[in-house]
Length: 445
Image 1 (cartoon, rainbow, N blue to C red):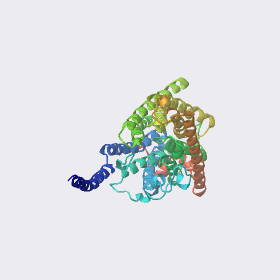
Image 2 (spheres, rainbow, N blue to C red; image 1 turned 90 degrees about the horizontal axis):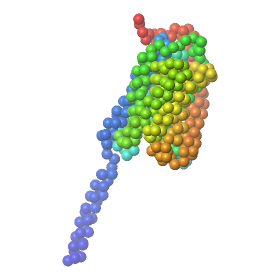
Image 3 (cartoon, rainbow, N blue to C red; image 1 turned 90 degrees about the vertical axis):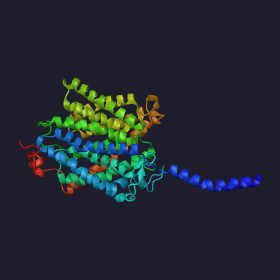
Image 4 (cartoon, rainbow, N blue to C red; image 1 turned 180 degrees about the horizontal axis):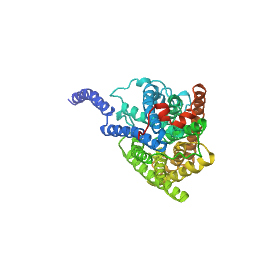
């Protein structure tokens, strides 16, 4: 009787266990999280908002009135061009992990494979994220907006003097050979060169800002100065536009930084908080540094300080605490003020709208200070136990990005200059790019 009972129980368990296993598999299977999805959709729209209209207005207000449409046109054209290149091959170069192996340096440590070219395999049901909780299509679009704004930032360095045709070709090649590979090295995961080094870059201090800032510096050096610089006054024609653009960048940056948590969670909330703190501190830091140095605070100054703070906190947003953000912001405001004014004046390069002074310098400063304030001992939320070792890793990442970007950008520019020329003519520069290249005026008064 007892044996029969156990035999019956065994038979029952043999029937039930497969069902339990199937149920466990169903529970473990990735399930779309509507909250994370909603936040990532919102963040994606916010980051696109940073370029059009944010950056377009921010840069457009700083140039002379005869060139406002050219700057806005470049931002819009870059948005279209990079969107197309991103879906054809950019996303694959940046995020395809074929051939990658942690600790092994090979070609795929620098360039992703082509397994995701033309977005192969992407469907409405494809999920991604820290726990595969939102659609891969949303992640693709989110990262596309980063790829869009990075080359658009470079426009500020060569504003008012590059041919539109040359600009389009340059941006397409630069995106392919510089932006996508750097994004892959930093963000693709185990096997990416700088990922394996342990470089901390939460939302793009290296990938976006140092990358764009260094490229901008090389561009303005290769193209040369604007006609009449620095003796001819070239004051911003509409600082109202610039302030509105800065405000849009400030708001949009919450998608940039908090969205990089890739989830609606505590990391996103802290990233939002430290972004606000650092930006406010940098705005005040730049304003007071200018006030003390020049006797008066300016609207252009506080707008520039805002962007400097946003840039500097970007790599640190996911790992630093509020007090670390305060220090990073103050340092960015003061340091970028002196680099964008004193340094540029002393060295004599014509970085038209301070793309290098704000994004290059701010990105470098933020990347290095991330290694300091990510440490829990200083209020951070990272895993940094040895600050000196992490700062060295950050310096390696900065150094590699600076050298790689500078060399490749220079080669691209020199080849294009030899093939088609980079600069508009002196006559076109005098007339203004709006009329000379686009046959339009920003203002018909």
